[in-house]
Amino acid sequence: GAVVSQHPSRVICKSGTSVKIECRSLDFQATTMFWYRQFPKQSLMLMATSNEGSKATYEQGVEKDKFLINHASLTLSTLTVTSAHPEDSSFYICSPRGNINEQFFGPGTRLTVL
Amino acid sequence: QKEVEQNSGPLSVPEGAIASLNCTYSDRGSQSFFWYRQYSGKSPELIMFIYSNGDKEDGRFTAQLNKASQYVSLLIRDSQPSDSATYLCAVNQAGTALIFGKGTTLSVSS
Image (tube, rainbow over all chains, first blue to last red; front, side, top):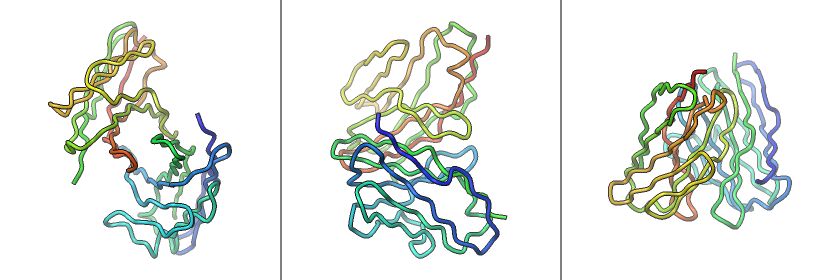
């Protein structure tokens, strides 16, 4: 399978601060990047889809001005949680996809907002 | 709203038994069906995928798909304690994101 990294793996921040999560596909080119989040005991919920060089498409109920997604290259995408609040505490997982219909998953980032 | 339904469990089976996990989906246009395993605090890892009606076997795992009934299942033979995890069913159409069910927690007792 593909090698996907996410950084940081765990972050704790104060309410009102912004947090940037990086996702890198290390051995393939990710033409599409999906971002999911997972609350405790819940499933992975798709937040947004981005194609390299294009603006992200957000799912209903996900604020595009709060969750900023950048997919400037085929190997790097970032998710910035702006003005984070405790309800944003979750497990964020990136999922890059190459030219075939297979999604890979990053190891996830555990965000805790105090 | 596209939905994927799973019984949350927990499903408890003794070591060596067969574990049967079930999933239904609402979108008749779904083309690809996946089973992932997720350990607590970790990202999902792919176990199997199936595209066509019928059975697909891979080692101790068998995926079964019935598109007419919009039903997909996963059988785990000779269950081991290390199989204890949450199993996520996911579906998609070509080119779209995977839609996940809430997962079924499996507990295999030794």
